[in-house]
Length: 502
Image (cartoon, rainbow, N blue to C red; front, side, top):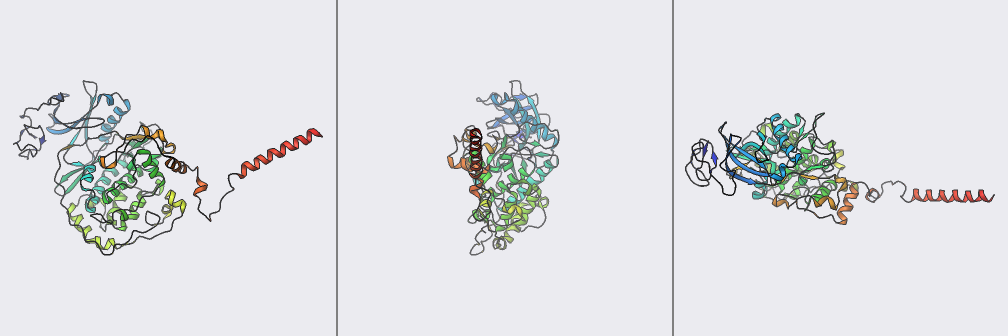
């Protein structure tokens, strides 16, 4: 390893100059470790092995450092928990689990976690591989939407990694753009899935960290069964999350928007998203209607009829853009080849029109008509309007230049933990930290307005009579049984009075 004698950054052996400071690099072991007046850890050696070089990021859970592993001669990301977090046994156990799970998941598309130990100052340190690049969330914030060739390649690599985890009965549960890391390379992004600290082990007898009925994850990408805290959650929750991320990559917005956690969960439980071809019609890279049924299947509210695996979703995603092969092939193809192939197909794909199917009021509310096999568009069965003329194929974009070095473990906040969606209320939102999506988080809510509460109540089935469409046979009105019971009581009282009089 080489190091910058001025800023302390570490570089591979073939690097010559620090692009940040412009200074010539020296051997890392020969460069004196820098110091930082604001952080006494910088310049010290932790566990007689990790020489801390600089602060990379400061998040809600801990501070992230770049360090030199003196034993292995490699750069590592060192995350030391904040003092208050280190006192929470559940959070500590989650970090410990991330380390343990990493040992079960050695995979090129899953971040490596090397070590986890208590520190002398009463905290804990998590040691991970150091990645060069940026989180998908940073890319989306800068670029808005991504070329579908880049999206297909990214989703294919995520699918390869997650299928590996799912085969071992491990569900990520917190897949989101912040946890998809893009390492820029000449052939395109090399994806690493981060943060398996919220993982659910679905194997029999697996240890549970979450009380049944508790919701964990990030609301924008949370499947309905996850929003309700159901213990039956499985790998199809990750399918939903990957579909929601894909939707955001091609349209520039999340499928279920909202300004606080509870509102987002109500949207997920009770609404259908606009079809991606409608939302992305005027974007830099138009979205073909062939993608609509793919997203629809992956965002089924009922897990039993949702796309069965992330690999299957990635296959259908590439096929929607006219690609031949499967996700394992696309994960390895250079991005420029995928971009060129999709650009050639795009004029034809934009002319395709999905089959439309009328929907009634109940289907509009619960969004399950197409779960019976219908292939209509996502919103009310209406097909996306066809463009007047084929849109020109977007020019192939070169992969973004490598950004500043980022640690793989940068997390500004722990996963959102919410009570069951069936009990969404004003008090639910009070403890949910949030900011607008374009700032990376979900804002805090002080409560839900009456209309939103009514929607949540309807989702619990308390207003099913009002949702029944006209012309559908209905059961007896709600007043009938109480009226009959009251009449029966009156008759019994009259009969009893006549008996006494006789």
